[in-house]
Amino acid sequence: MRKLEKVFCGRMDHGGCGLIVYVEDGEITKIEGDPESHTQGYVCAKGRAHIERIYHPDRLKHPLKRIGGRGENKW
Ligand code: SF4
Image 1 (cartoon, rainbow, N blue to C red):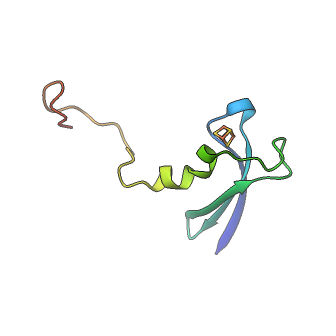
Image 2 (image 1 turned 90 degrees about the vertical axis):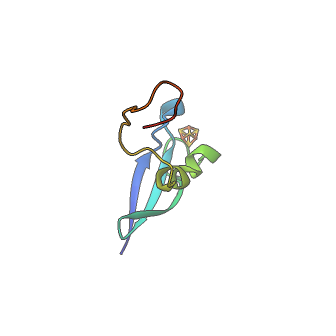
């Protein structure tokens, strides 16, 4: 089921751009600017890239604890 959510971009430049987020089966499928918000539908490249950022396989989803020495890149 497709659902629309009106939100503000979390980066919060100039108060945060108003966005419309489309969610299908619990997953964001599309983000566009909200023409009814104070930013009148504007959304920059960073705002449009939220989907890639959120679902990127290398995204850290919890804190990591270092198990090796400094600079060994072991977590
Ligand atoms: S859409 Fe872009 S300009 Fe607007 S708050 Fe987000 S990052 Fe900032």
